[in-house]
Image (cartoon, rainbow, N blue to C red; front, side):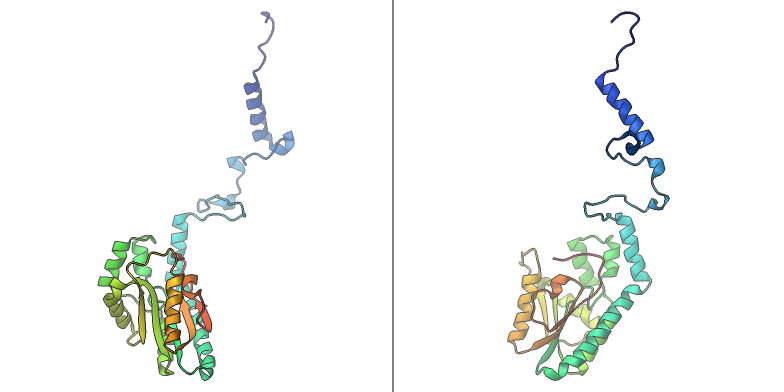
Length: 252
C-alpha cells in the first residue's frame, strides 16, 4: 500500500457498519432481515408491568409479581367468591334435578380451595409450596369455608345425600383436617379419604379415581363431583363435575 492510499476497511468493520445503518434506518429500508426494535420505538403501552417475553404461540409470560398481585386483587375484590357462588348455585340446581333418578345419591367434594380456602397460607408463602409450613398451618390454623360450597353441602344433607370428601392431603393430617372441616361448618360426612403418606405417583388422578370407585362399590351413585383442579374431576365415576376457579397453583 502506497503512502497515498487510504486503508481498506476489513470485512468485520464493513459488517459492523451495515448493522449500524440497518439499526438506524430500519431493516426494511436497507433490504435486510428483521432486526430488534430500537428501545425508543417500543410502544408506550408496553409499560413496566409487561414482561415482553413472547412464546412461539404468540402468548406472553406475565411477570411473576404482577401475577401475584392480580391473584390478591381477585380475592380481595370478592370476585373469586362470587364466581364460586355462581358455580355452586348451578351445582345445587343440578343436584335437585338429578335426585329423583338416584337411589343412593352422593356428592364428592375436594377440600383445599373447594370446601375450604387456603388463600391465607398461600399468600403468606408467596404462592409457593413449602410442605413443612403447609403441615404446620393445617395443624395450627383454621380455614374459612367457601360460602357457596358450604351452602351446597348443607343442601345435600337436607336432601339426604351422602357427602364424601376426597382430598390430596396426606393421611398424617387426618385429625387436624377433620378439625378444620368441623370448625368451618362441615360437621358431618359419610367418608373422608386422604392420600396415603407413601403415595408416590406424580398425578393424584389415579388416587382420586380409585376413591370414587370405592364409593361406588359401596352402592352410592355420585351425582356431583366438585373440585378446583382438573385432577379432582378426571377419571369418571360421577354424573356431573364442576370446576371451581383457582389461580394459585396447579396440581396434576
